[in-house]
Length: 281
Image 1: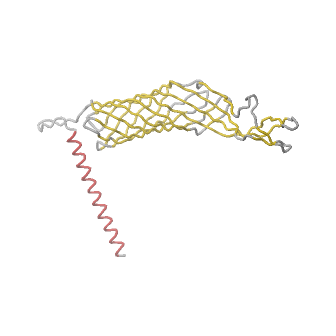
Image 2: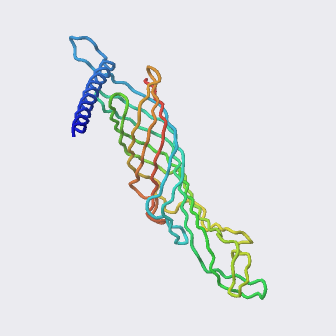
Image 3: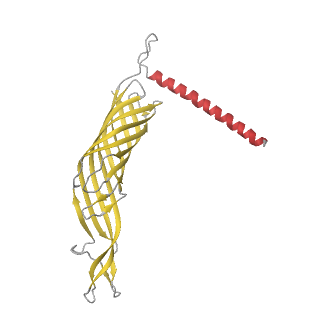
């Protein structure tokens, strides 16, 4: 009993000490940041925080995922598609006299997804021995590749704490400059067994011996080229020099609009890992 009480007392004491240290560190950090950002140090005049502009660029990886259902020309439905892409662009940021900033990003995004599903269909095949035709079950793999190129402008508000960590929220306003949807149907099994016990190599009708066939390949029909989304991001500012910052950023874009009315109510979400470089003008 005594040891338990003693342990709780020591734990409480340490928690109090750590809390006190963090509070003191926070106060000192805030004071240091305030002093760094003082433009006018005249004690007879009110202090002013620095207000200046930053410009820079960013690049990174985009991990894309499908929202909703993608429907191709053969009324095949794809769900849960995903793929990777890339992001590259530039940005402008304006500091204000508070911890809030505003800015705008302008860049190119490759948002592609690949969806797939398997199905079993009855296919007419001819037995080699007697020439009779049978309808036999054959397994197919359906693959839908969607490739999209966006030009995206993202005006945003940014909140910075301790001159280090930040979060920002903005509107992702995109224009789809390129789009393509390819639906391929592939044979999964290369042999088939007939009711008479005979087996043979599977072939697709009118496919010239190929094991796959392209059912659709072209631009997305009825594409809604103007897309709107919400961009939420967080990152860390690493000061490389007096006027240069490097920031690793994680950004998530949630689409508000869908891609097309003809190919189902699908959209493309993006989780982006970015590296931003900014310099003070």
